[in-house]
Image (tube, rainbow, N blue to C red; front, side):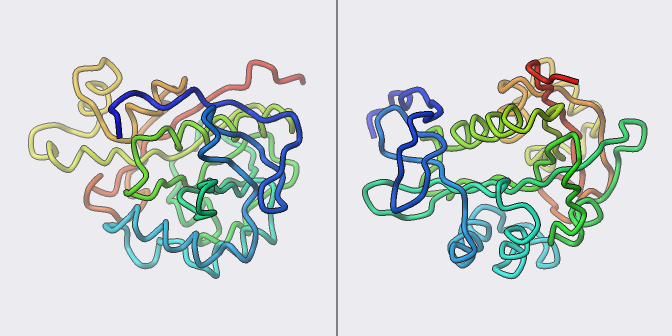
Length: 238
């Protein structure tokens, strides 16, 4: 690796395909592409999930069964990044549609996602809910999460949804939990006084913090907290 930033990501409106799949986005150097995930990707998707979230409880980790259920309920929202030279699946994101009550946003992850099966998907939901995004540790620092976020935002615009919401995992909080409340930590991250490996990246992508979710999931690195974040689609047409 040269230490230089990866080329800019871009959508791929020209209708290219890779391994028989429509390419939804590509990195400018052509080394990685985003495609819609398929049911037969489930083993590779679970492998990436386990590599990305070693601290997540077994009850909340997404397995092959979960990824196949996602395909049943909302295939368009399931994305994968493939390495062009090897065809290996190295990153993915999982989303469903829902309506959001911003006065009662604090729900546990498993409740929001139907125990990770996406049975809560609402085909008429006005928001895309980001259930999961992960980049294999061997491939981090190459702009693949940015590539996935761009493809998600393209999907939101295509479906004319109001925007994207998610429960971000403040994975840096565990290191300072003895000294700061979660609210103090989140405000410090927003002000740029602290850097969080997840939340800081999402804030740079135009997301804003709506609130904190206690007992969102079972992960000691974030002391089980989630941070409810929002990205609004400026192209939304009522």
